[in-house]
Image (cartoon, rainbow over all chains, first blue to last red; front, side, top):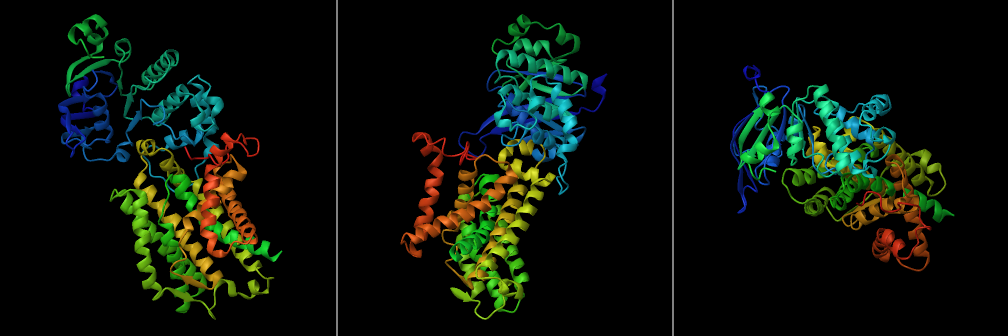
Length: 259
Length: 301
């Protein structure tokens, strides 16, 4: 049924190189095809070098593909910059340092996030007016962030920073949310907590989301669709009940080295 | 006494350079060498315009524009030409030497007998050196107020985040190239403005007046940070102005000790080097209780 709709994101025959123009140029994505539909919560598995991060960088616009086409609800965005794509794209990086501005406060970071993809004008920033909303948004993360709205993010813990990054990426509802192993750098407890909050928010707000993970358990537990990248292509793609029925043993029997 | 008044006046006039450099050095997080060219460029623009009969106020405004244009070129070389910022700045600074000679038609131009912004009846009626205190204070208050207002706007916040985390800035739709170019234009425009004011205060423009400018401007930033410690961004801009005055006092003291004005660049470099080393020096010498927490370490990470 979903398949009859226009995909929210469509990758057609994508070829992406890294280190292009240098002797170490390597083809990472090899004629990859992927359609992402509204409401998809896709967990992305694959061994190191399979192309998971390159896939995200290609979607976000950091790495332009050498050939192929990227469509956002049917319109070609292959040549669009990272800045331009941010109007419909939210992203959380693996490195807690990448997602927030260290010398700006939690509230200032959130304020920047409310204007994701918009033109910035000479209008006053209206930080005070937004404080109640920020308080409310951070309370939901349940990790002390709401008490630290006026703290510079460089003074936050890694877990608080990632929670903030996640909040920022979803504060203004994105058409597509990219989560690049966003809990990998955190300790097990914090990681689990953030995963649970992520899951809750994605389901509550019916976000369309791609999440890279190295944890088979997480990949099976969360989301309604699972893909496995291998050698620059989507090798395995299950959804719905088929995904729910999938077990770790089954997955490992197909792919010995996917995670 | 008049030495102190003169020091405050000079400090306030030169403070504009410190505040201007703050935009690139502390907010965008890189050293912009262009200023060594845009300072004399602003001076050359203003002095030449005045000597051709342009009103001093308009001439000072023109200096802002030529400075901003030089900043634009550095910005384009850096963001579009992918030339490292240090080199881009040095290229424009070098090019400015020729441009300045073209503008002035020689190595220096005097303002002797010409009307400058310091020639107004009101300023002339003030006691000696109070004219530069008045003009310096007025300008630094206007510039700092406008900058503080600007930094509180959406555009200003986008500018700050560009220096703080460009990857994140882009992922939220901020065109970091444009922000960088804007910052360089604003900063160098203000440097040009400073050049225009200082050359009118001195009564001449000289091709070599840009030498060592970046060190002087940095000194006011660093001294402000060392003395006042951890502050908010807005307070830090004010601290730069105060740092500029303190720097003038240090120079006065050093001159009183018997050094000549020829030694000034050496002394400036030594003062700046000492201030920059202070965080690590105070750690090794266990001087942490002498200086406020966080002194000199702001934004150097």
